[in-house]
Image (cartoon, rainbow, N blue to C red; front, top):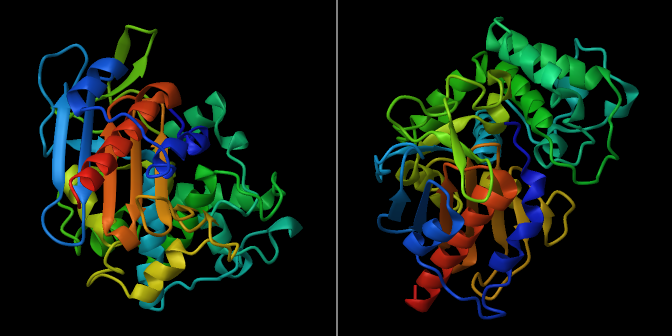
Length: 369
C-alpha cells in the first residue's frame, strides 16, 4: 500500500533515451494483453488543443465493465507535484515563502538540531534527510489508518514527530519520502488555516476546473486498484479496505482524478503556469535544487535533454501497492504524456505505465508532433 516512488526511478531510462536508440513501439491493446494489467490509460498533451486520451481494459479484474475516458485514477506520489504547486500559489499570495526554514514555520515545536537551517524546499525535493521507515511499518500505518482526530491535528502531530527525531538521511542526498510531504502539508495548513484537502480544493482543483478530482482510492463504480498474485492472477482491492495510504498522507499520495483533468494540471508546465501562477513560480518548482542541470526539483525529477525533448524532461513516476502513474514533460518540445494503471507494483503496473508513456511519445514524434 505505501507509495514507493524510488523503486521506479531507474526504470525511466527507456523513456529518457528515446531518440538515441530504436525502441519497438507497442499499441495500448497489445501492452494491456502483454502486461496482464486490468486497465491502462494514457494522454498526450501539448500547449494547445484537447489532450489525446485513450483507455483500455476493465475497471475490475473480476468484472467485464470497461474503463471509460472520464474514469478517475489514483496518482499516488505524483500528488506531490500538486502539493508543491499549491505551496507556490500560496507564496504568490504572501502566505508561504520559498526558502522558509522549518524552524520558522513550526516555532512551537521542539526540533532536533539536525533540522536547524533545513528549508521546506528541501523537503519538497526529498533532500532534507527525512526517512519513511518509521512511518511505513504495519504498526504505524495501522495507527494512522485508525486515527479519528481531525486531519489537521493528525498532520501537526505527524510533523512534530518527524522534526523531533534526528534526520535519518544525509542532508543533500536524494531519498524519496512521503513523510516529508506530510510536513509540507502541515505547513500549508498553518499558512492557509484550512485542511490541506480544503486548500487544495479551493486553490487548485477549483481554479483549474478539475471537477473529477478528489482524495483517496476511487470508490463505487470507478476503477479499483489491483495487485499481482502471480504471473497470471491479480486481486482487486476494495477501496474501503486498506487500499490507500492513511488519510494523513494526503499531501504526499492521495489525489485521484480523470486523465482529462490531470492533463489540465500537467499543461501548466508547458505554458509557464498559464493563467494560474506566475512563470517564476513554475521555474522555481522545476529547477533542480542543487542548481545543476538535472536532479530532484520540487515535486519533480529533472533529467537532461533527450532526443525527443529538445530540452530537460520533468518526470513524476509512482507505483503504490495497487495503482501506478507516469508523467513525462518536455517543455521545450511542447509535449507531455501521462500513463496510468489500476495495477501497482514496480514490475507490474509500474513497468506497464512506463512502457505506455514511451509508446505515446513515440507515436507523437513519428507523427511529426
